[in-house]
Length: 286
Image (cartoon, rainbow, N blue to C red; front, top):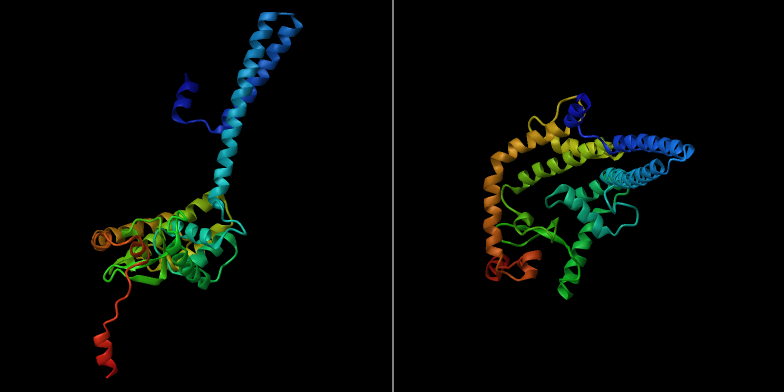
C-alpha cells in the first residue's frame, strides 16, 4: 500500500521505468531458466511471453528517453542553429526568441550568443531588401520573409527594425509605446531562453546572461547588484511594467493594423510608400 501511495504522489521518470523494466526482465529470465531446468513447458512459455512483452516495453521506453535527451539538447542548441544555416533562418530563429521586431544588431548579438558566430548586422539589413525584391516576383515562394517593422502612424516601413512576415500585422507594428513594451517583451524572451539553457546546463547560458543584463537593468526591480541575473525575477518585473502599458499599446497597434488590413499584400508586409509633399519641398527650397 505504501508503494502504491508513493507511486500516486510522484510520477516515475523514464529512466526509473527502464530500471524497473530491467529488473523484471531479470526475474523473467530467472523464471525461464527454472522452467527449462525442470522441463516445465507451460512455465517456459509464460516466461518467454513475459520476456517478449518486457523487451517491447523496454524498447518503447528507450525510444522515449532518446527523444527526451534530444529535446533537452534542442533547448541548448535550437534546431538548425548550426554552422552553415542560411542567414534568413538564423534571423527568423532569433526573432522568434525575441518575440518582437528587433534591430539587426540585437539579432546578430543573439545569434552570436547561441552559435558562437556573429553575422554582420548589415547583412540582415541587406537580407530584408533582398527578400522584398524576391517577394515582388513571387510572394508565395517562402513561408516567411524578413520584413521591416511598420510605423503605426504613417503605416510606412521602419527599415532599421526587422520582423517576420509570419507574424500577425499588429505584432509587426510599432506604436508610440511600443519601443518600451517591446523592450519588456525582449527581456521576457531572453529570460525564458536563459532559464532553458541553465536547466539544460548549456554553456550558452552565460552568453545569454550577458546579453540580457543591460536590458534587464533598465527594468525596475529586475536585477540586484552583485547577483547573477535571475530569469524569474526579470520576468516578474517585466510583466509588472508591461501590465501598465500593454493595453494602450495593443489598442494603438490594432487600430493601425485595421487601417492597413485592406491594403495590398505588399503594403501589409513592406508598408505603404512614403509620400513626399512636393509643394512643401518646393517652398523649403525657395
